Length: 355
Image 1 (cartoon, rainbow, N blue to C red):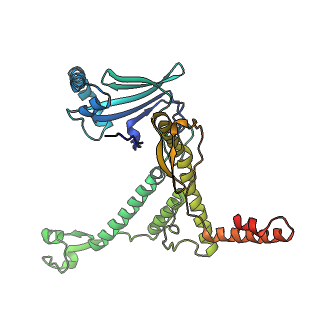
Image 2: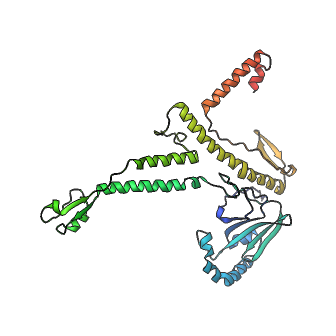
Image 3: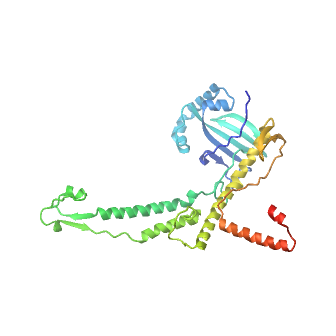
């Protein structure tokens, strides 16, 4: 049998990562300390780090005997993870630390070092949609809209409460009214009263629902669109409260697309670029023989061992969300200028066709 290696990229939850405080951006290349914390089964730990299973169980047995009382008191597992760690699982700390200008990888299980080596890079890439100064992890769309969602939920809940109160109002009653009949509100229901009902039952008035509450909901929707760039127009919906002219719609869509394009470009130029630099380094340093790949519709032999170390990459962001009418107008303008350039001999029809 022949073993074939492949690149494996895994999404890591931010709460499972620890980064030194001096890291002020998404790039981890210069970080002094990076640690990935993961709960693994004992058998997987033994297989991954080439250790006997009994040796791993012995480490965990000593660790539980020594620190079980302290761990339960601090409740550290429940604070850091959604579930409790089972008896056949353990918390593995994959640590990358820079000492005296050299980076070291140290894998820790409990208080025991399972594996250590010198390494050239940190095999993690951080992707964040909105970079914040002096912060490793920036802001997400949820950070921009959580307060708006809370306000909208409060407004809509108040509107519903007012409607419920209009359908099932409050009453002041005397002791001549049957209380059980009043507490049961149903269409066509009977209420038993001694004497004149008008003197025994008096409805309590409540203020009607103000029109400003609906205006406030629309205002919060518009604020969400301004913050995120996701408008009703670029979702194919009809926004009655906005400008319906062609110019107004184009301006709104261009502004929203610029914000979305900025997030896509931020993804590309930070985490995605660093990720593929790591993939390039891994392929170049670990592949042991040439491989046959398809390139430009041809099968060619490629030997990554001959590649040079790359410090930079060019990312092509396929957004595909531009204004087609505007792009067509620009192309028509360029074609008109090229026609004028032919007349004065600057270019030729062949060059225009190739362009």
